[in-house]
Length: 102
Length: 171
Image 1 (cartoon, rainbow over the protein chains, first blue to last red):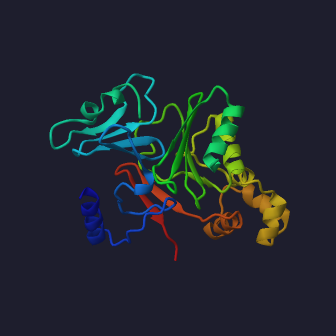
Image 2 (cartoon, rainbow over the protein chains, first blue to last red):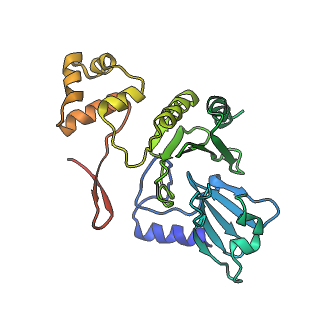
Image 3 (spheres, each protein chain N blue to C red):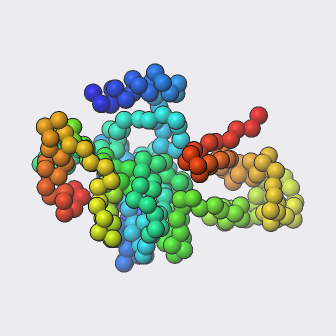
């Protein structure tokens, strides 16, 4: 539903075609693309990879964006975190992610 | 073995102290990712079938948000070219982000001689050599040089007060 909504908003407001191309810079946002998604085994969790970051998306709507590598200064690896509809965060759904990326 | 597996193997062999992580999307025709951590440099690579290798590199002082959802800074067409480019970035500990390059550096990275380019541009080598050393070049001349290298010229204006980045078009 999130992907459909984003596509519909961009179709209406951006004036640009819904044709994501890796080498292009467009003034249009695209939802997570299927060809970047992998499954986190054993959890209701998908992983979306970009160059330097990982976006985890859970079935309850929880999301987290983090760097692929833990910062050496000890700062938080998560750059953005949002709990799902039931209040659980990505860390609640998959506690192993507190120690390492899966 | 995919081209990314091959690239990982070459890098592991040449940079045994580097940490290298690889990830593949579930879709067998989807993206494969390679992240190389060598010294204070991080090189991020993505590839999928029927596409070139896209790569960006980040220095140790990069912000955690640098590169977030960005397209790659550079593109290489073969595993060999990608390997050499990554090796060059690692040796120089150089970031591709916000990194201005001289025309001569780009030509060198693309493995082209002044002689070859001057032939492509139908000018004498001495004329082309002067262009590379000039501090001020016509946009039309720069476009011809970049296209002769196989590229496309894009010029951007950055406004720090609004963080606005605008691409300039010319009639």
